[in-house]
Length: 264
Image (cartoon, rainbow, N blue to C red):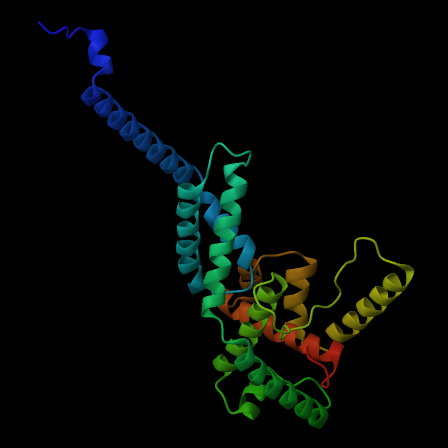
Protein backbone atom coordinates (compact mmCIF):
# COMPACT_ATOMS: atom_id res chain seq x y z
CA UNK A 1 0.00 0.00 0.00
CA UNK A 2 1.38 3.39 -1.06
CA UNK A 3 2.11 6.05 1.50
CA UNK A 4 0.16 9.13 0.33
CA UNK A 5 0.28 11.22 3.45
CA UNK A 6 0.51 15.04 3.46
CA UNK A 7 4.31 14.96 3.60
CA UNK A 8 4.61 12.94 0.43
CA UNK A 9 1.99 15.04 -1.36
CA UNK A 10 4.14 18.15 -0.87
CA UNK A 11 6.92 16.42 -2.77
CA UNK A 12 4.71 15.06 -5.54
CA UNK A 13 5.73 16.59 -8.94
CA UNK A 14 2.10 17.31 -9.91
CA UNK A 15 1.44 19.04 -6.62
CA UNK A 16 4.57 21.15 -6.91
CA UNK A 17 3.58 22.17 -10.43
CA UNK A 18 0.13 23.27 -9.30
CA UNK A 19 1.60 25.20 -6.41
CA UNK A 20 4.02 26.97 -8.74
CA UNK A 21 1.20 27.93 -11.09
CA UNK A 22 -0.95 29.15 -8.22
CA UNK A 23 1.93 31.18 -6.83
CA UNK A 24 2.58 32.72 -10.24
CA UNK A 25 -1.10 33.55 -10.72
CA UNK A 26 -1.26 35.16 -7.30
CA UNK A 27 1.87 37.19 -7.97
CA UNK A 28 0.47 38.34 -11.31
CA UNK A 29 -2.81 39.30 -9.66
CA UNK A 30 -0.98 41.21 -6.95
CA UNK A 31 1.14 42.98 -9.54
CA UNK A 32 -1.93 43.95 -11.57
CA UNK A 33 -3.55 45.27 -8.41
CA UNK A 34 -0.47 47.34 -7.56
CA UNK A 35 -0.29 48.74 -11.09
CA UNK A 36 -3.96 49.71 -10.95
CA UNK A 37 -3.33 51.40 -7.60
CA UNK A 38 -0.43 53.38 -9.08
CA UNK A 39 -2.58 54.53 -11.99
CA UNK A 40 -5.65 55.53 -9.98
CA UNK A 41 -3.62 57.39 -7.36
CA UNK A 42 -1.69 59.42 -9.94
CA UNK A 43 -4.33 60.36 -12.53
CA UNK A 44 -4.38 63.91 -11.15
CA UNK A 45 -0.65 64.10 -11.85
CA UNK A 46 -1.37 63.81 -15.58
CA UNK A 47 -3.47 66.97 -15.67
CA UNK A 48 -0.92 68.75 -13.50
CA UNK A 49 1.91 67.83 -15.87
CA UNK A 50 -0.09 68.89 -18.95
CA UNK A 51 -1.02 72.25 -17.42
CA UNK A 52 2.48 72.92 -16.14
CA UNK A 53 4.30 71.75 -19.25
CA UNK A 54 2.17 73.37 -21.92
CA UNK A 55 0.84 76.51 -20.15
CA UNK A 56 0.68 78.85 -23.18
CA UNK A 57 2.12 76.42 -25.72
CA UNK A 58 -1.00 74.83 -27.09
CA UNK A 59 -4.52 75.69 -28.08
CA UNK A 60 -7.23 74.94 -25.53
CA UNK A 61 -8.80 72.28 -27.75
CA UNK A 62 -5.54 70.31 -27.73
CA UNK A 63 -5.56 69.74 -23.97
CA UNK A 64 -7.79 66.64 -23.98
CA UNK A 65 -5.52 64.88 -26.48
CA UNK A 66 -2.45 65.80 -24.44
CA UNK A 67 -4.11 64.46 -21.29
CA UNK A 68 -4.82 61.22 -23.16
CA UNK A 69 -1.17 61.00 -24.18
CA UNK A 70 -0.07 61.73 -20.62
CA UNK A 71 -2.43 59.08 -19.26
CA UNK A 72 -0.93 56.52 -21.62
CA UNK A 73 2.48 57.55 -20.30
CA UNK A 74 1.22 56.94 -16.75
CA UNK A 75 -0.08 53.47 -17.66
CA UNK A 76 3.24 52.56 -19.26
CA UNK A 77 5.06 53.85 -16.18
CA UNK A 78 2.91 51.67 -13.92
CA UNK A 79 3.60 48.59 -16.05
CA UNK A 80 7.34 49.11 -16.27
CA UNK A 81 7.99 50.37 -12.72
CA UNK A 82 10.18 48.15 -10.55
CA UNK A 83 9.26 48.65 -6.86
CA UNK A 84 12.48 46.96 -5.78
CA UNK A 85 14.55 49.84 -7.12
CA UNK A 86 15.24 52.84 -4.93
CA UNK A 87 13.03 55.18 -6.97
CA UNK A 88 9.81 56.93 -5.97
CA UNK A 89 6.97 56.02 -8.35
CA UNK A 90 5.65 59.60 -8.52
CA UNK A 91 9.04 60.84 -9.71
CA UNK A 92 9.30 58.02 -12.23
CA UNK A 93 5.74 58.59 -13.47
CA UNK A 94 6.26 62.36 -13.79
CA UNK A 95 9.17 61.80 -16.17
CA UNK A 96 7.23 59.27 -18.27
CA UNK A 97 4.08 61.42 -18.37
CA UNK A 98 5.98 64.55 -19.32
CA UNK A 99 7.89 62.67 -22.00
CA UNK A 100 4.63 61.38 -23.49
CA UNK A 101 3.14 64.88 -23.54
CA UNK A 102 6.23 66.38 -25.21
CA UNK A 103 6.27 63.56 -27.76
CA UNK A 104 2.65 64.33 -28.62
CA UNK A 105 3.46 68.02 -29.03
CA UNK A 106 6.43 67.20 -31.24
CA UNK A 107 4.36 64.87 -33.43
CA UNK A 108 1.95 67.71 -34.20
CA UNK A 109 4.61 70.25 -35.07
CA UNK A 110 5.66 71.43 -38.51
CA UNK A 111 9.04 70.14 -39.59
CA UNK A 112 11.71 72.58 -38.37
CA UNK A 113 12.92 73.28 -41.92
CA UNK A 114 9.40 74.07 -43.12
CA UNK A 115 8.76 76.33 -40.14
CA UNK A 116 12.05 78.18 -40.58
CA UNK A 117 11.13 78.87 -44.20
CA UNK A 118 7.80 80.35 -43.10
CA UNK A 119 9.45 82.40 -40.37
CA UNK A 120 12.11 83.82 -42.71
CA UNK A 121 9.32 85.21 -44.87
CA UNK A 122 7.40 86.52 -41.85
CA UNK A 123 10.52 88.29 -40.54
CA UNK A 124 11.23 89.85 -43.93
CA UNK A 125 7.65 91.13 -44.26
CA UNK A 126 7.71 92.49 -40.71
CA UNK A 127 10.93 94.42 -41.37
CA UNK A 128 9.58 95.80 -44.66
CA UNK A 129 6.30 96.95 -43.12
CA UNK A 130 7.97 98.44 -40.07
CA UNK A 131 10.29 100.45 -42.30
CA UNK A 132 7.35 101.67 -44.36
CA UNK A 133 4.98 102.42 -41.46
CA UNK A 134 7.60 103.62 -38.94
CA UNK A 135 5.97 101.41 -36.30
CA UNK A 136 5.48 97.69 -35.65
CA UNK A 137 2.84 96.42 -38.08
CA UNK A 138 -0.46 95.19 -36.69
CA UNK A 139 -1.24 91.49 -36.91
CA UNK A 140 -3.93 92.14 -39.50
CA UNK A 141 -1.46 94.14 -41.61
CA UNK A 142 1.04 91.31 -41.43
CA UNK A 143 -1.49 88.72 -42.53
CA UNK A 144 -2.66 90.95 -45.39
CA UNK A 145 0.89 91.58 -46.61
CA UNK A 146 1.69 87.86 -46.39
CA UNK A 147 -1.49 87.05 -48.28
CA UNK A 148 -2.75 84.58 -45.68
CA UNK A 149 -5.76 84.51 -43.33
CA UNK A 150 -5.13 86.04 -39.91
CA UNK A 151 -5.69 82.64 -38.24
CA UNK A 152 -2.98 81.08 -40.41
CA UNK A 153 -0.56 83.87 -39.46
CA UNK A 154 -1.24 83.24 -35.78
CA UNK A 155 -0.85 79.51 -36.32
CA UNK A 156 2.65 80.04 -37.73
CA UNK A 157 3.69 82.17 -34.75
CA UNK A 158 2.22 79.68 -32.26
CA UNK A 159 4.13 76.91 -34.00
CA UNK A 160 7.33 78.96 -33.78
CA UNK A 161 6.74 79.33 -30.06
CA UNK A 162 6.12 75.59 -29.74
CA UNK A 163 9.29 74.68 -31.66
CA UNK A 164 11.30 76.98 -29.42
CA UNK A 165 9.83 75.22 -26.39
CA UNK A 166 10.67 71.78 -27.81
CA UNK A 167 14.17 72.90 -28.70
CA UNK A 168 15.06 74.15 -25.22
CA UNK A 169 13.88 70.81 -23.86
CA UNK A 170 16.33 68.98 -26.12
CA UNK A 171 13.77 67.49 -28.49
CA UNK A 172 15.30 68.79 -31.68
CA UNK A 173 18.68 70.09 -32.75
CA UNK A 174 17.41 72.93 -34.90
CA UNK A 175 17.80 76.62 -34.18
CA UNK A 176 14.67 77.78 -32.33
CA UNK A 177 12.46 80.12 -34.30
CA UNK A 178 11.94 82.45 -31.38
CA UNK A 179 15.01 83.66 -29.56
CA UNK A 180 15.63 83.02 -25.91
CA UNK A 181 16.30 86.37 -24.35
CA UNK A 182 16.80 87.69 -20.82
CA UNK A 183 17.71 84.28 -19.41
CA UNK A 184 19.05 84.23 -15.86
CA UNK A 185 22.53 82.98 -15.00
CA UNK A 186 22.84 81.34 -11.58
CA UNK A 187 26.39 82.59 -11.05
CA UNK A 188 26.81 85.57 -13.37
CA UNK A 189 30.07 87.36 -13.95
CA UNK A 190 30.18 91.19 -13.78
CA UNK A 191 30.08 91.24 -17.58
CA UNK A 192 27.04 88.93 -17.61
CA UNK A 193 25.30 91.17 -15.06
CA UNK A 194 25.96 94.25 -17.19
CA UNK A 195 24.76 92.48 -20.35
CA UNK A 196 21.63 91.31 -18.57
CA UNK A 197 20.85 94.81 -17.39
CA UNK A 198 21.29 96.07 -20.91
CA UNK A 199 19.02 93.33 -22.24
CA UNK A 200 16.34 94.15 -19.68
CA UNK A 201 16.57 97.85 -20.60
CA UNK A 202 16.21 96.96 -24.29
CA UNK A 203 13.32 94.66 -23.47
CA UNK A 204 11.53 97.41 -21.52
CA UNK A 205 12.03 99.82 -24.42
CA UNK A 206 10.76 97.25 -26.90
CA UNK A 207 7.66 96.57 -24.80
CA UNK A 208 6.84 100.30 -24.78
CA UNK A 209 6.77 100.27 -28.58
CA UNK A 210 4.20 97.47 -28.74
CA UNK A 211 0.52 98.21 -29.37
CA UNK A 212 -1.45 98.83 -26.13
CA UNK A 213 -3.23 95.48 -26.33
CA UNK A 214 0.07 93.58 -26.52
CA UNK A 215 1.58 95.60 -23.67
CA UNK A 216 -1.42 94.89 -21.48
CA UNK A 217 -1.35 91.17 -22.25
CA UNK A 218 2.34 90.83 -21.42
CA UNK A 219 1.93 92.89 -18.24
CA UNK A 220 -0.93 90.68 -17.04
CA UNK A 221 0.79 87.42 -17.96
CA UNK A 222 4.35 88.09 -16.82
CA UNK A 223 4.25 90.87 -14.23
CA UNK A 224 0.88 90.11 -12.63
CA UNK A 225 1.40 86.36 -13.15
CA UNK A 226 -2.13 85.69 -14.37
CA UNK A 227 -2.99 82.49 -16.22
CA UNK A 228 -4.13 82.59 -19.85
CA UNK A 229 -7.67 81.98 -18.67
CA UNK A 230 -7.50 84.90 -16.26
CA UNK A 231 -5.98 87.16 -18.93
CA UNK A 232 -8.80 86.15 -21.27
CA UNK A 233 -11.37 87.15 -18.65
CA UNK A 234 -9.71 90.56 -18.14
CA UNK A 235 -9.47 91.28 -21.88
CA UNK A 236 -12.91 89.73 -22.54
CA UNK A 237 -11.65 87.46 -25.30
CA UNK A 238 -11.22 83.70 -25.58
CA UNK A 239 -8.30 81.85 -24.06
CA UNK A 240 -7.36 80.64 -27.54
CA UNK A 241 -7.14 84.23 -28.78
CA UNK A 242 -4.93 85.16 -25.82
CA UNK A 243 -2.57 82.34 -26.83
CA UNK A 244 -2.42 83.70 -30.38
CA UNK A 245 -1.83 87.29 -29.26
CA UNK A 246 0.82 86.11 -26.83
CA UNK A 247 2.74 84.38 -29.64
CA UNK A 248 2.45 87.48 -31.83
CA UNK A 249 3.65 89.77 -29.04
CA UNK A 250 6.69 87.55 -28.38
CA UNK A 251 7.52 87.62 -32.09
CA UNK A 252 7.40 91.43 -32.16
CA UNK A 253 9.63 91.61 -29.10
CA UNK A 254 12.11 89.18 -30.67
CA UNK A 255 12.24 91.31 -33.82
CA UNK A 256 12.87 94.42 -31.75
CA UNK A 257 15.59 92.79 -29.67
CA UNK A 258 17.38 90.86 -32.40
CA UNK A 259 16.79 93.00 -35.44
CA UNK A 260 15.65 91.88 -38.93
CA UNK A 261 19.07 90.47 -39.83
CA UNK A 262 19.14 87.92 -37.01
CA UNK A 263 16.97 84.94 -36.19
CA UNK A 264 14.44 85.86 -33.49
